[in-house]
Length: 382
Ligand code: 3HC
Image 1: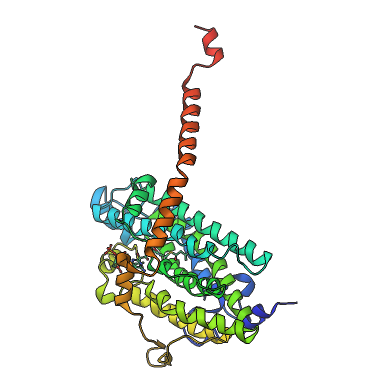
Image 2 (image 1 turned 90 degrees about the vertical axis):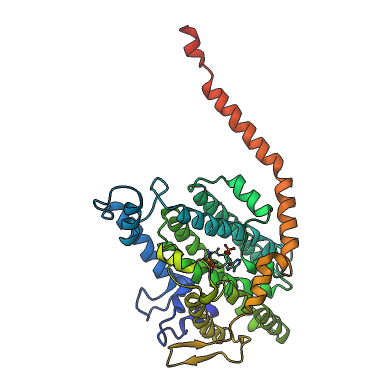
């Protein structure tokens, strides 16, 4: 027998607008009546197929030679730039900034969620949340590894974060006050993350694009578990429903702000889009997210806290009230509700883990020394 959530999700109105609603949750929640290729996970699958096909038939740069012509030809042909390829300094610096910020976000993002592991309402919820938080650690590691291919070490990236020279996403500076916040983070924060990150599966830098394919598949599960938590609460007691609504009220605008400043104030978008690092502008992705959530909220039976949210048939999109960008800038500058707490916790965890790094280095050195030492069989021949 299908569970209630899956039945409800099957009835999502997916065909009214060109936004993605039904298939974002994965195959088990996909609407069998909808044509394939209409959802975010289908876009990830398309990007993965495209990557494999391109790998198999290197058709990109023709006679462009090396250097900047070759780079431009690869980008124009939608081929991937690989670590061995020449790339402009600005391209490298932009990637290091964005990918490191992304990696730091995954790691710092473990804190607000881990806050609820010991207080999850059941063993099942606890196991799911543990798995999810571990996934975030894995995402951080893929992304640090991908960033290292640009010639910067993970230690250096850690120092930049701890020294306040690199950032992490604004969203993780908000507190998780109730269990429903775990649902709201899954539905809204991971939902926003997916909308932002699916296009990165087509990023021009190969290691980043490949990492994103795996990450997006896992994020889809994260969003689904958040939706399911909220759905359960919203269909529970009046107090549970109120708790779910309160969480959505608090997380809606910070989630909208995750997409960054409006296009008019976005410093990097134009160049990043020309280099095909970013494929859509901040505002385009924010709009896509709003359109998706407006429909899903009705399935949840919850209200998005925006009295001006309404479908605009002329634009073919929902009108909405933008987030408070002054607040976003304050949070980015380090003045959000939890910035200091997050960094203090991260610094302490880094220091506590020093012995693990030392032990791993000592073990690696010992193995290398053993491998370099003459073997007994070689000694007998001397
Ligand atoms: N939080 C913190 N800083 C932000 C930000 C945010 N939400 N949005 C923008 N910024 C910063 C930029 O880094 C940039 O800083 P700088 O000028 O000092 O270098 C400045 O604000 C101007 O913004 P731009 O629009 O010019 O910056 P970008 O072109 O880099 O676009 C972005 C911002 C859309 C966030 C882009 O960097 C991006 O797509 N990054 C990859 C995805 C990512 O990092 N997501 C973070 C969340 S991870 C996550 O959610 C984990 C999941 O498990 C929940």
